[in-house]
Image (cartoon, rainbow, N blue to C red; front, side, top):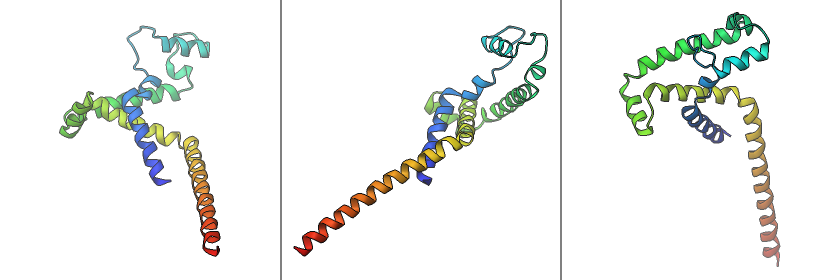
Length: 149
């Protein structure tokens, strides 16, 4: 189970580094321009656009988006200077800050979605082991019959 867990973590990290799903969930606020995402949010809530995002979403979405962008900008600025991330980013063809944020996003996505994929992986592993045990028991019976004959 532990090996499968780390393989899944690597897959989520690769997915996060490539697609950066949290950046799509929390788009950077634009300067007064209405993006498609803000139109969808305002339509879903049915409130006038003059209200702030904190008021429309009950506070959590605006707070999360502000803190996400503040921390991501801070992390990106500090890691753009890091030599190890620069080398790794040049090998993958990405900017160092984007690569680091993608790795962080993939890790968060993996941890948040564990209640979904964890039991599924455990069930698959248990079925594979059960099938292997049945095959081993069948072989043992065949060898026992062959030895008796």
